[in-house]
Image 1: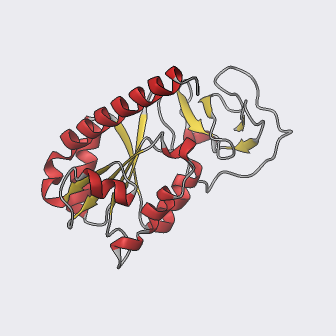
Image 2 (image 1 turned 180 degrees about the horizontal axis):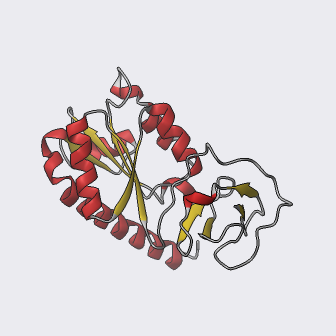
Length: 213
C-alpha cells in the first residue's frame, strides 16, 4: 500500500500484509517523525484519503517499522542474556508495551532510526567489549533534545546500583537498573517514568511562568 505523510508529504510503500483489513495502526514517518494513522485498506491512510505518490518515494519493505495499535506504547530491548531478556519482555508486556528485540547494535540503531520508541532498555554490555563505549548509549546521548525527551532510557548494569541518579545523569540515561534487581524491572521502570513525567511537568510549568513557551 502507498502511504503519504500529512506533515512532510513524503510517500512510501508498505507491504499490504503488515496491517490486517479492518485494523488501524500508527507508524512514525522516517523523514519528519510525524505520527501517521494507517488502516488495513490497501492504498489508504486512516483518514480515508488515498495516498498520493508525488512525494519522495522509497521501498520500505526492508525498513524496520514497528506498527502499534492506537494509543499503544513501544519499547526496544537491547539485551544479549536470554534469561534477562525474557524477564524484561514479560514485565513490559504486563505494562502493555509492544516490544522489539534488537539482535545487535546495528539492528538496534537501524530500528531506532525509523521509529521513536517510548522506552529503550539497553544493557551497558550489549554487543560491546567496553560498556563505556556502548554504541546504543552513545547514539542516544547524541540525539536532538526534541526527540530524546520523548524517550525513556533504562540501562541495565552489573556495575552500578539501581536508581543511581548521579550515574544515570553521567551516562545520559533516565534510569539505571542493576541486573540483580531485574525481577523487579517493571516496578522500577514504572517509578522512574512517573518521576520523569513529574519533572517535565514542573519544567514546562516553569517555562510557561517565565514566558519561554
